[in-house]
Image (cartoon, rainbow, N blue to C red):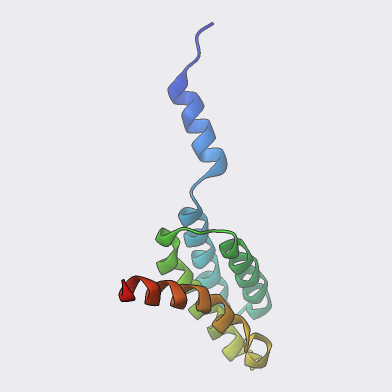
Length: 106
């Protein structure tokens, strides 16, 4: 029984993918929807992306996460609904802030 390991590895990696790629694709979709002024869809997509980010604990996603947070707040600013996310962004950034201060103090 011959098994093509390379083909099997390619199928597994395509099936699961890297979280960085998924977040980057989410950012592209957000930008596209903002350009087409579909703000309700942007809110839904950004909320789903942020929920997915909460489950990740990878430093490689932090740069993409910051862009995602900025578009998330930008679309709420465009729709005059900043009050909805008043506590969300600081809560998301709190964990990152504590980590940064811990690293700097060491």
